[in-house]
Image (tube, rainbow, N blue to C red; front, side):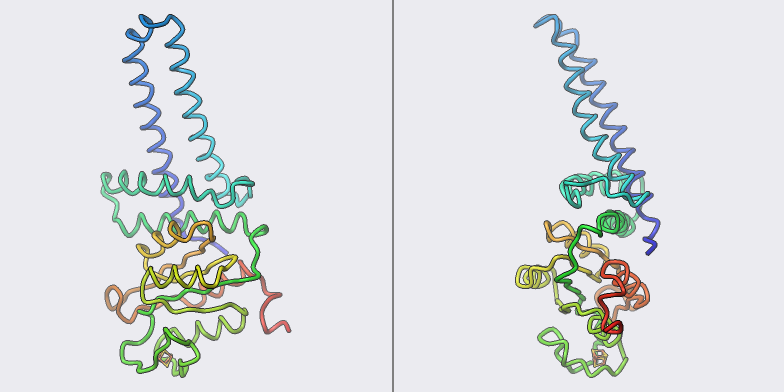
Length: 258
Ligand code: SF4
């Protein structure tokens, strides 16, 4: 499955942030060298070595993330989805991107794209025994009288919203499916179900927060569409969701193949 091009934006900004940090670190060491050499003759070498080691660790981690995201190679092993690095990178990229004038929502979706690319790179070692399909309540048509947050079986599959098609997908791919009215309830569903992987549909803001908050559970995110404004009668490209399910779970696990 092809992930959206936002990972180029996210990783480009990450490398820019890294270059800025490296320049600032070099400048700080350069400034304190005259004082350091007075304290101990070898202190400047020690300071340069420490700064170099720190930058090598950060740059090495970023290089592995870049290779995994673009080449699809599972080079992050054994660190899993490298969520800690991603957790640190996200606020840095968000801040730098905002300073450079990028839209916040675009930056969040770029983070989600990068996260998805890393999950796809590692999918062979992520179990699909317990897949949780998390959907936002705003996908449900606002006039629908049926309470699907309690039980998705209440959906009458009238086709007025994407819930019917998504429910059908969950049945075909044997996934557990929950509709959550917010991040707290989504996290509760995760804690209750203890999935091996989560496929989540939500806005960029909720997906970015969910990916970080759900750690250590891997979350593959698909942003919804908001033709009627935020949180109201939202939609999702069902073909894109099925493509993600196929890629993550594999056609062999569908009911069709039974
Ligand atoms: S598809 Fe289901 S959730 Fe959507 S409006 Fe119809 S009955 Fe309600």
